[in-house]
Length: 325
Ligand SMILES: [Zn+2]
Image 1 (tube, rainbow, N blue to C red):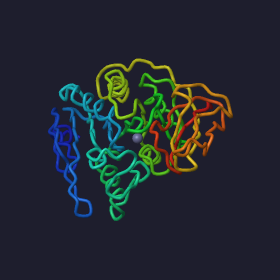
Image 2 (image 1 turned 180 degrees about the vertical axis):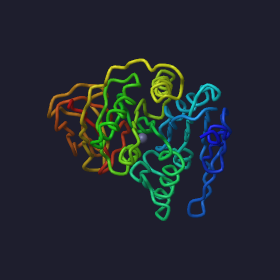
Image 3 (image 1 turned 45 degrees about the horizontal axis):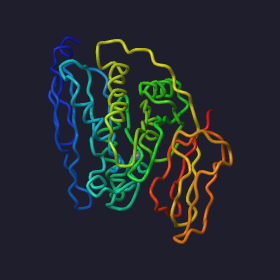
């Protein structure tokens, strides 16, 4: 025991990036996928003393800007000499999606990175990227937060998401992570291949947090994610201070309404609107004004996000309605 107690704390490595105890290390992690060099901006805040690891991702969807600004402000605002344990933050998890302003997908193969976790080192480009993020960042956390917003053509009313796995210790902790954010609801997410689904099933308390959208990054929206992350640092025990009690968020299920034919989308309701079953969410029209689809809500609830671009294609999500549990 004595020998172990005197052993110096190890540096923390994420790919080629190394942080010594009591320091913050910022830099690019280099990886190569099918001959294409990718540079992922990562920050490690490695406390002097041992403790939990908090893993945070932004930019899994490269057109979601609130998280990229909020997570950056969060990690640069942490004092590495004050925390115990380690924070790992991936600031732009799908760098070519960011550079190309590609909503929803990784332009390397047109796939949605948030359907590819935990990834596959022998799969296609998006599966390889998911595997790198999974093995270097997400799976190393004792807690995991995946920060999102509506994408460039999406409007959204802020919410958190958790994936229930039936293990009380994990599900309770995931709900407590969600309640650290100043938002109004938590939605149960069981999407196969999403980052929090993979993490929760691996036994890591995890939360998705969705704030803002439409390619914007307003200071009040950034503050919602940044300040919630700072509360999570206290909740997770990385600072030697008590976490303030938080009110649990009301739980919701969600239902998606999809576009049935290509056309022009005219939404009728703003996110956050309360709606009855059968309410008209909007219409899809052809270029000349003929109605191709009247999109109606199959359930009563709250419109939590939807498409805001005029262009709509078959299979696009045009509205998502949350219903209280
Ligand atoms: Zn997203």
